[in-house]
Image 1 (cartoon, rainbow, N blue to C red):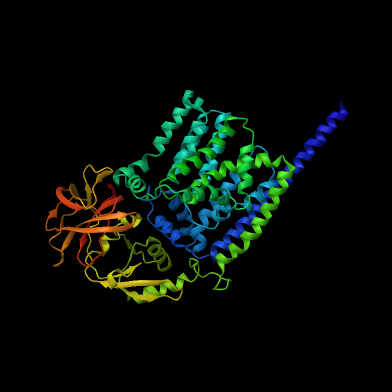
Image 2: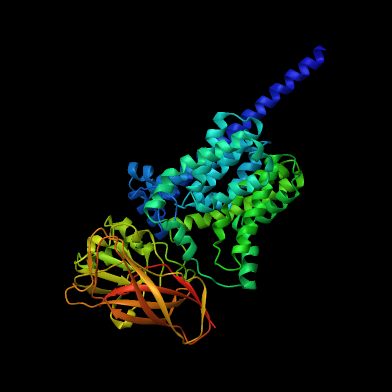
Length: 577
């Protein structure tokens, strides 16, 4: 009896010592990870995409055109406290660390040595600590979603219900396809529909989403329209499908991805929680595989899969010594590969002939100074390059506009009032291309050429919307002249007069596009009308279809003479046979 008692006490003491040792190991890892992240973020130049999200943090709102609000919310506090590159990424680094902590807490079996090395071997974990990305808050709230869902399955109470509902709202306000995590979790457990608390979660989630929904309503559901109508239909291609399938294991590795997928597959489903994890892995991958049959799928869109992959993979591998050894070896090799890559982001130590053709990562401060000097102090406008406009804004503190033309896509710049502040002013216009040879060319010290010209009395009517009534994948004969009824709506809060633009003509154009490539442009008429605020006008126009067969997009523009034709409405599909 005494022997058993002493043995039990001894084993408990040993377990306590082991747990304490593991916790210290994990704590030391977090300290080193934080220090490495701070150093990295201080010395790494901000990319154009990061600068775009920095603008979000300068104009905090309940949503943006192409993304929900969390990327701006997470970014803002750090930059307010420390207005430099490190402060800009501070919120992302903290969110990245919190994701790691939540993942560890969600694990059934703690093997800190394996878990830490897995974190060091995963590319998304490294990127999450050094870049401003929409996926960083998405991964955090996906991790907390599974944590709270696990608690909910064990203990159904109001605290868990409220936290789970709030978490679901935050998942969807991080990135719209975060809704897939919720959908496949519910799909894995139909028993949820029988629980009153489940419907309470649904109701509370709707309440928490109301500010975001109201923003969409006030902006005519701009985000929904953007994601529905701005995807380029690539059509079916075996190459696209094979690329999607082959790249996924590399996205989550690159070296340990295949092993993680194999471990998750072999993991025995023992509970509703495990079933939810597996449903999410399979469901998200199949969803984007189906999407890849028509549209371009960015490889990081499946990032939410990383959370269930880690939870299932770690549990399976930790109890199998051979798997564990191989995982540790691959993680060490991965870290060896990641370290020089991270150093290169901070310091350009590679010979120029090695990096020829790569995107330029260094020296953008000098680029901004050269552009600023070249402009002679005039307001700068970039055409079809929201990342360059955002980068210039970040580096100089002078927030500039991105003017998007009919053969590009809308960005958040189209919703901000930046263009209105330019009306009637002389501007310095920078384009990606030398349209019609009207631009001068200047090559900056980092090799990035710009095409520029000065435009006096800049005018635009971007917020007058023009769309065809009732057009939905209609078919027409090649070369056919088609009569359309179009509706023009003035979305400005003042009257627009197309006949009073300092002697310039204002044209209504019809453009036929293949993807983002112009096929034909018809000048339909010179506009001499005026529209009151909110006024709609229906007109009949004739547009000639292309002489070639295929699927195309029809888009209209209202163009001020001497200035590139803008976007004045969504693309609408036409089929020419």
